[in-house]
Image (tube, rainbow, N blue to C red; front, side, top):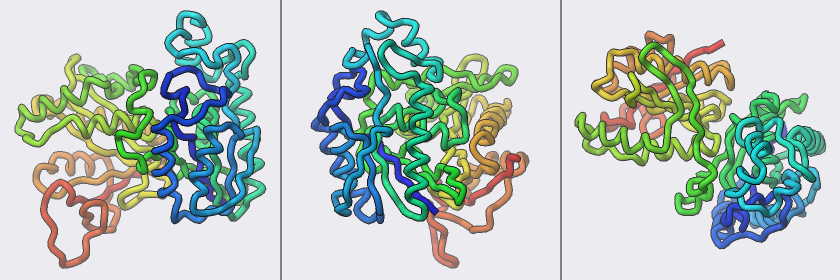
Amino acid sequence: MLRMYLIRHAEAMGNVLEFFQGRTDEKLSEKGEKQLACLAERFRDIKIERLYSSPLKRTLATARAVNKYHDLPIITDEGLIEINGGVWEGRPWAELPERYPVEYDLWKNHMEDFYIEGGEKMTEVFARMKQTMDKIARENAGRTIAVVSHGCALRNYLCHCMGRSISALKDVGWSDNTAVSLIEYDNNFTPRIIFKNSNEHLPPELSTLSGSKWSKIDDVVYGNFGKITVRNLRMTDPEIFAREEVKQGWKDATPEKLQTRLADNVSGKAIALAADYEGEPAGYVSLYPYCMWGAFGGKGYSEIVDLAVLSKFRSRGVASALMETAEKIAAEYSDTVYLGVGLHSGYGSAQRLYIKRGYIFDGTGVWYNDKPCIPYETYPNDDELNLYLSKKLK
């Protein structure tokens, strides 16, 4: 089986100054150099047998960091290069909507149809990356390899790995600088995503994506259920929900948890949802299509996490609407979805809801802090003590 790590380059000056970088060959920023130190440690103990890179400065510097403990030749491939931005190259993002309104609208809302004078069509990038990666995969059957490329180029290939056409490109999400994805290939060289856009090696202050002005989340309505509307989680929601949770007695409620979900949403690792009841924020949940923790981690299944409904909106169908939406999205990625549920009485309503919706226990017993509990040992009966359940979606 071939295992391929896909890595986006570290932060370069185009990311800092927020202009269209494309094939403009910029050097790394100061933060980018710090990101590379973290990336090198992530790959210290991962056995890599071959290493490929786009030929631009920012990708080659990133490949050298991946290679720090491996001493491999770095194989450059023009097919891994970033999209050619034509007349957009080097122009600030802020001026593009006014100077190129038609093309900018395509970039934001219909990426599959994007084209620009003097540059590449997005369909050409999709085809190029698919052809290049297929060639690399077939040359490396049975190996573990790493490939360093660019944000738009990798987004196109990850769309293909998800089994989607280019029309789904907008749903893939941007990766953080130095984010890592892992792809496995079967004997027919069909790719399967194990995890996507992981930036766990970066401390929060070294994330580029979380502070980027252009990485805001667009409003999306996922479903209407009478008085309930399920939509994307918004930037303003963490403060709203934390304030309401404190009012209802959750003394340790803070915005940080949902801010993490928002960051994961921007990077394409999660789909973070919220529900409004008659226009007022009422509950939230997140779906991780490619999850790496818990009883089903690394098996290609989706996980539902952090289902919560404010007390004043309970027993009105909010939780069911959120679960219905999350399961519908999960079915686009895998045939099984799973979740963890706490054991103490505060999770009683959730336990009943999951059983009613057809979830069954996985058989691995009780878990604490994402590790199976040792029989006859003692554990606190707090929020980290849980059981895992799964449901077949198709």
